[in-house]
Image (tube, rainbow, N blue to C red; front, side, top):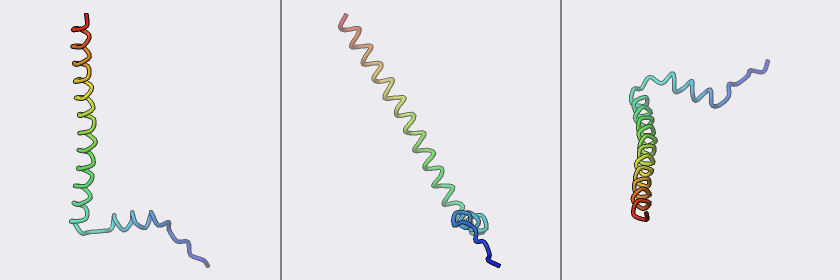
Length: 65
């Protein structure tokens, strides 16, 4: 009988879950934390940028009246 082979993604996921080396899990955790902080930083910078833009628009409108 022909044996079915699991898909490559499932093999990688299974290998990751079976990996008992702590360094790999820690590295992936740090990587995910850095991605999360980068996304959080982008959101907060966008918010600051919008507030500055609103402030300058308010000043411009006030001076033009």
